[in-house]
Image (cartoon, rainbow, N blue to C red; front, side, top):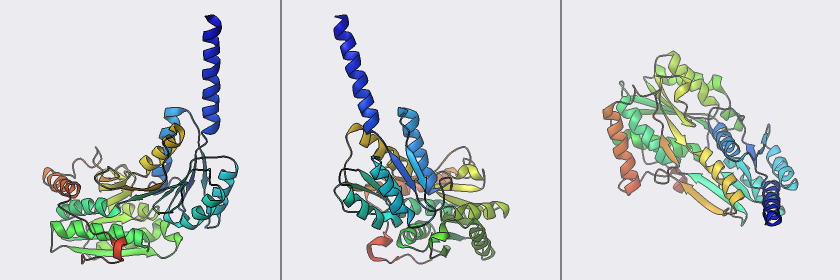
Length: 332
C-alpha cells in the first residue's frame, strides 16, 4: 500500500513538473512603458495577478522602438514561451508574421484582430465605456463644456472620442465637447508635458471636465486638471487614486482581465483562438467608482450612468462605433 501511495505521489510530482515546464507565459508591452498607469500597466497587473495565484512567473519585455515587437515575439516563441500576450494594435503585422512561423505557439493580441488559427484577438467596445463616462462628464460639468484628449490619432482613439461625445450629448444636447489629439506618431502615447499643455488650452476654452485616452500622455492631462482645480477622467486602469477628489472617474478597460484569462486558459488547456469582443455587457469596459471619487459621483450622477449602462446591456442604446465606417455622427 505504501508503495502505491509513494508511486501516486511521484506521478503527481512528475505531472506538476511537466505542467510547470509547459506553462511559460510571456507579455510584451506597447510603447509608453510598463508603468504608464494606464494601458500597459493594466496588462502587467493581470499578469501579476496570475503569478500571485499560481506561482508561475512570466517573462516580459518593454519595447523601445517599432522593430522590437517582431524581435521580441520571435525570441519568446523560439524559447518555448506560450501563450505570448502582446499589447497594442501596432503589433498586428508582427504577430501575423511570427504566428505563422510558430504554429504551435499560442499568441494573444490586444486591441487588434489577426486571423490566424493560433491567435486570440481581444478587442474592446471602447465606445461603450466612453459613452458611460461621457454621461458622467455631462452630469458633472458646471460650464456645459467638456473635452477629450486623445493620444495617437488613430481609429481606435477616435472610437473613444466618438463614444464620449455620444454620452455627453445624450445627457446634455447643448453641451460643447472640445476634442484634441496629441500627435500622429507613437510618441503621442508618452508625452505628459504636451498632454498638460493641451488640457490647459481646453480649460482656457471653458472645459471643466477632461477625458484623457492617451496612455502615459494622459498623466499630464490629469495633473494639469488637478492643478487648475478642474476634473479629469482617467482611462484603461483605475486612475482615480492619482489625484483623489479631482479624477471624476476612469473608463476601465479590462486589459488586466484579458491578460489574466489568456495566461490561465493557456495553463488549463482551454485556450481558444479567434476574436474575443469585450463590451459593457461582458464586463470588459466600465466606469470606476471607489473611495477616491465617492464624493464626486452624486446620487443623480450614479442614477444617470447606471441607467445608461442598463440601456446598453439591453440593446436599447446602441453606441456608434467609429471603426465601422470611420465617421462619428455625434457633433461636438
